[in-house]
Image (cartoon, rainbow, N blue to C red; front, side, top):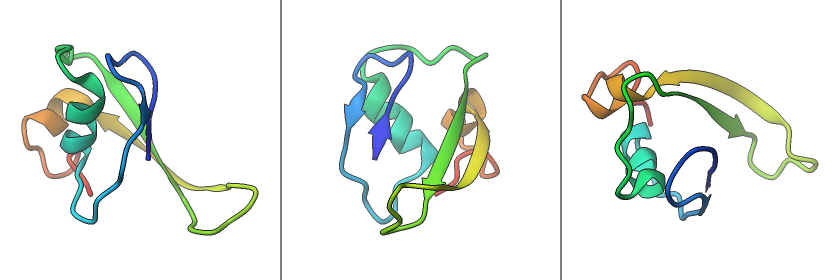
Length: 75
């Protein structure tokens, strides 16, 4: 998995089976605070597809995900 954008630690990280949006934020944000207005796009790719073709793009409200909102803090 890749974490990109305005984060303290962009890069490639291992993706675990039970990882949620909040976990991704914590990995990439590190010591940076997540401003309430931040939004993100969670993009999923089909496994094994070459070239990599996005199968789904989901807009996420990061502050809601960090506050445990189940509709934003998805797997």
